[in-house]
Length: 261
Image (cartoon, rainbow, N blue to C red; front, side, top):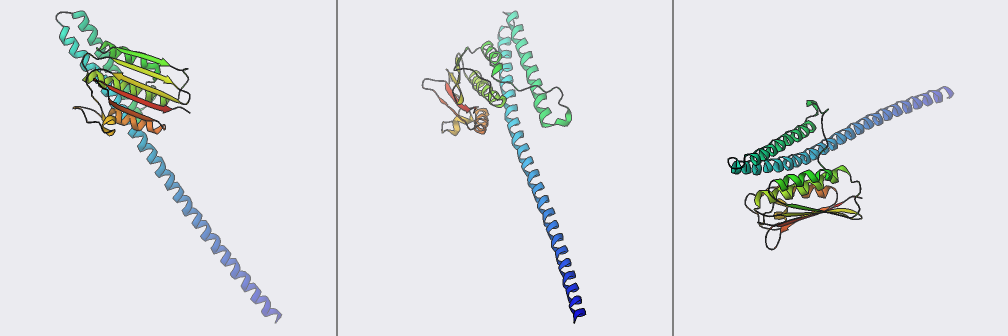
């Protein structure tokens, strides 16, 4: 009886050992599958982030090309008008065209370098921010649209993305006004509020709006682009809002609020 009991005990212990080993194997297999699933989820999230960034870069590319090409067209037309009577002014206008073209190519190389890092990105330069507002206003004024800039509130350092977004809002609004306006002028207000950066661009002349205004229910204008609609999405990334609409008497108004806290 004692021997039989020992045999039964040994068999039970062996069975328990086998069951524990199989349970451990199942647990290890389950953990491995869980790790694989988590890795797949991380890869999927990374791809989604990359896709979103590429979409933002595409909008950035539109802003850059649209602005600089518009300036080049206006300056070329001005040079053609005065080429025979005022050759010095024509040369100045053509020099501005050359500068705008070089700026466009430089920024295109920067953005393409971001899209394709394998092509080399050692010479990538930062995107324009509010620090570049002065040269932008000078180019627009030289192209024929006077611009008045007002800065209110205590200026403070801003995240580069917010500052670049504010610059693009002003750039897109002035470019649209320059492209479609005739004899108008513009007022740009940058206000550093306590919790948000506020940007306003007022222009006179024809009431030409882009995608953002149409999204608000305003009728589209012939040839209107999608730049401000893209900027509206960009502002929303920072929890802000952008509104663009016609002004009574002509021209349009673009207002944006971008929280910086």
